[in-house]
Image 1 (cartoon, chains in turn purple, green):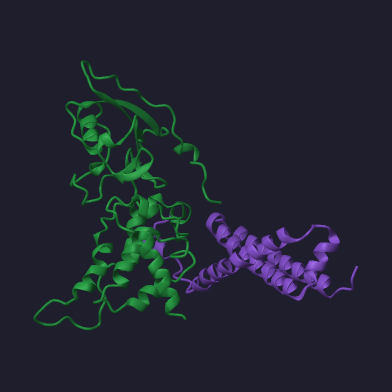
Image 2: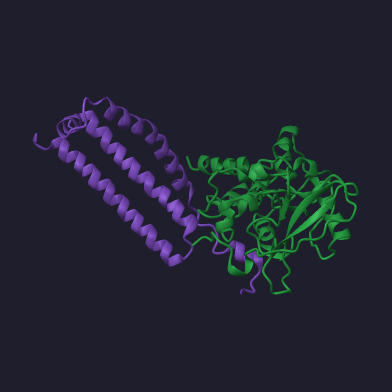
Length: 128
Length: 260
């Protein structure tokens, strides 16, 4: 129960003066993911086989490794931005929202770093 | 969390079935949401049989007829009966629309009438629009200009400048759009909603207004503006065929363009 005016409740703590950047980067990453994911699926499709030797040989090529790193970093970035929107939409408790946002960000950074590291390890590692 | 189920005291239980009028030839079944805050009971869905012969063509005519002939406690807002006041906005067969411009003949089968979704209900089909109006007030829907008006005439606009605001300014604030928006359902405490945002847009693009920057500043917020995820329920719902989704998209474009 609050006796403050409806206008005060709507105005709240005022505009955050942010949101444009988030919105724009979410669109940019989604545009970038179109050719990257098409490339990823088509390249795997075109491989003669999906056994360990074939895939690591494919991943060791410079262009493949480069595009693969771009793909996983962009996907993780986009996933972080998208999950942030979903959490802001549906999780209303200030504490649980902040906690979830932090967890999602940590998780996405971890996934991005691990994936990029894995690609580099394969690309620069000695032939198995 | 967002509310996916109504609170226990808002869930619809049972309902009264009013007897079919004697000697009625052509009839339609109308089921109407009823809630009386004084009774302490949950809302219910009452079943009415509408006699078509003595009823006008619109859903509003049906409501007026049922109130006069069957149950005088049936409560709803109405005024102009020609789609310009926005009072009789309600959810008819699952779609937010104006009762006065919705023809009974356009509705198939049983007619189901509920108040606008996800708003506090004052009584029956009357929602509490206090927050909705406060959101409209929050975008300062009036001309802001430090240049004084010419002493001998009004502030002029070119024909093209007027055409830009012509459609957005035709909004009747019926709330069909905002209450059709899931983002508004979950976050109406912080998200301004399509109606208020289109009102903001109407003043942002007004060639006579000088507070464009301040208006954009006031909207630059993850919740106030960016809760819109462009699902366009608002444009779909608008009984005046306006396009709030486009107005919001234009605001987002302006936000970006002033930065880059």
